[in-house]
Image 1 (cartoon, rainbow, N blue to C red):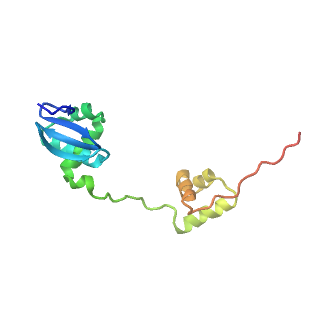
Image 2 (cartoon, helix red, strand yellow):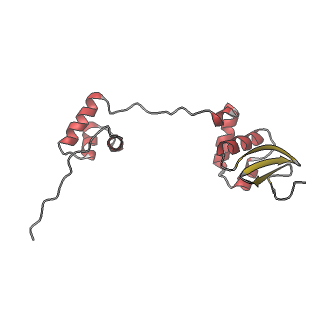
Image 3 (cartoon, one colour):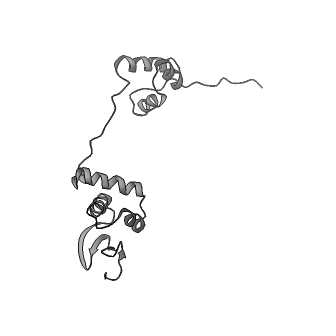
Length: 153
C-alpha cells in the first residue's frame, strides 16, 4: 500500500524521512511535510491527526517513541488552540520579585556583614534559592568570603 522505505503508522498513514525532510503519506499521496528537527510541526501534525481520528495516540507513541503524556499534552493544546498554539510565541510568566526596594537593601546589608545566604533567608523569610538567583543575576553581591584561620600544629 505504501511506497518502499516508509514506516507505517497504521493502515492509512505512513511516515518517511528523506534527506532531512519528514513526509506523512496517505496511501501514495504526501499530505504533510516538515524538517527533521521541526518538533513544533511534528507535534502539531500528529496532534491534528489524532484529533481528526486518523491515528490513535498509541500509534504515535509506538511509531515515534514519544511518551504518551507528551502526546496527550499536545493533543489538548491542539484542541484548545488549534495550529496557532504550536507556533505563537508563548508569553513568559514571571512571578513578581520578592527582592525589591527595602528588602533588597536589607538583604545586601546582611550579606555585606558576612552573614550566609541561608542565615539571611531565614531571618527575612525569603527562600535561599531566591537569594542565590539574585546573586547569579548580579542583582546582589555575595558577602565577604569567610576565611579559615591558620591552625597551629
